[in-house]
Length: 150
Image 1: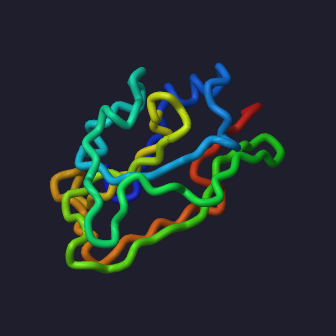
Image 2: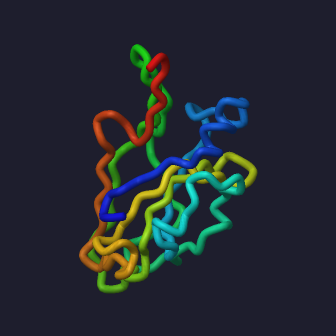
Image 3: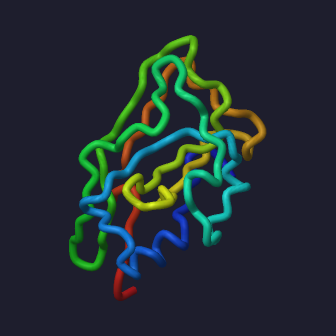
């Protein structure tokens, strides 16, 4: 595992197919956690945010922030979840214990995890130091996709 590796939760995709979520109208949030990327099981059935250890708000970082302008759309055979880029400013009180960034569906009863991203450069050994701030840029292809007919 390395910086910016990511994985989507298999159970999230399964529940989406069962109609549990409306990715276009549900509220998505993000949070930093102290769990290592490798320790988060992408195939687990229980994928609620309560299964992880959140980094508390400190400095310019605000725990459980809403992802602005989240939308679910489709072009040809690819559906995608997209949201605005975001950042928080430098502050000497910003967290230094985060190892993984987490996107979760705040509308779902269990606050189910959609996606996780590794924030470490050494497979989770050294936590990310965000005292200089934090920037997250969503890829042009979206934060996550589902491709049909492949």
